[in-house]
Length: 476
Ligand SMILES: C[S@@+](CC[C@H](N)C(=O)[O-])C[C@H]1O[C@@H](n2cnc3c(N)ncnc32)[C@H](O)[C@@H]1O
Figure 1: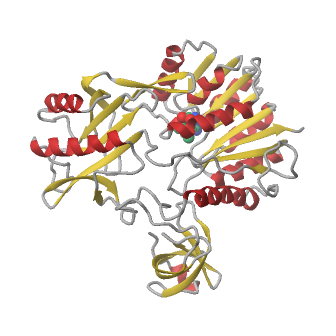
Figure 2: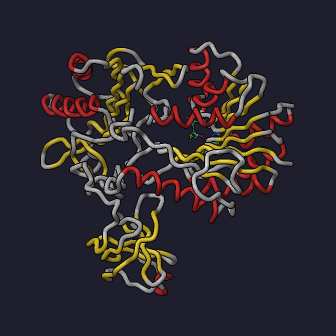
Figure 3: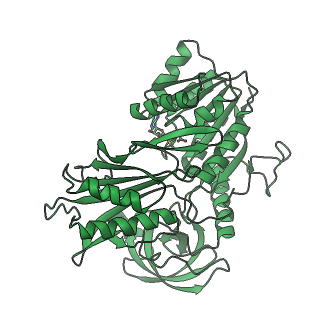
């Protein structure tokens, strides 16, 4: 991570220098934020409240990176990470921090962003009564009763190491595969399938794809499971259309693991770092599996997006529904709607929902999902939210509630302007990035909305990420 730049010369530390740092916070990737003579160093594995010895590995103008060498004064919340490959694997960043402390820290991270970037006053304590406190209420993070084995989808990269196949995860910041048949944040069925496919591929002599050696073969295995239905899909990704003995392999996998309903083959001849290509064919069973969120049923195909933590998705959408305050007569706009998950969840309590999403295939899925559930009051359109919603406004569409759930970079400025101009009574902002969330809340506040409450939800336990659902009401 990070390289030495000319501007770094002014830093009070040098590359390779051994330093003692006081850790004062946590970064967006779960790394400790250390201070040395007022200079910030990001130190993976260090926790707030700790004093650590570290080696400086990279410098930028305003901050640097350091490798943790020794914890001199440990945090009382430090725990032994349960995963045997945690130190190598890039999947989790906070397994060395107790879960309750993790939830507290994520709330703090959100509150800090609200104050520092959003210039919002955060109410003291953890009040729950709307409007009772002075300032924005930032609730305690909603955690999982059991924060392990929560992912319903995994993408396992495949390579070759010492002549054998390696199925695992990428090491932090690289494409080196850490070979492991177990992962504590995916299902036991996924572990079983990974072991089985690895063994069967080795027996069948199917190699791993290697771009440098120009060797065709397996690139990824993707496993998706419906949390409520138990239906499982396996996608074998290769770099070209040839997968010798594919049907037989698929049949053997399906026979060996109960719940497997679909086995697909995807061809990805794209650059390193990409997972799937556009072409998918069915090797065995159906082309889709099903799952439910609340009362709504969703079809999940090989290429379609679906939230990966089903338990917390229900908690998050439950909050979005509560904050939308629907009574049955409202018109709702759902911007950045993906495959229509939030739209269809809200449509059950609204008069009409309009969903907009950039990816046309996701909109096709949204329409299909509406049909699957007999939901007739949801309309979907593909396109950029920042051009489609202003056009809807010109066409006379009025919204009582606008929901936004943008990617990490937050909402487009034109969309925020349009929301201000449309004057809905409520805005529900769902965000996976507290800093862009805080930036956008400031724009909405200046445009006549008040941020009432913020609910952090732990969608990705053991990582530095935190999702938020925010209620804003119109004041002017
Ligand atoms: C965080 S996801 C939310 C998906 C959905 N709300 C859900 O809960 O499953 C953000 C979505 O925004 C879409 N997107 C990105 N830029 C967009 C834009 N300018 N206009 C509309 N949608 C966009 C992405 O394709 C993605 O589906």
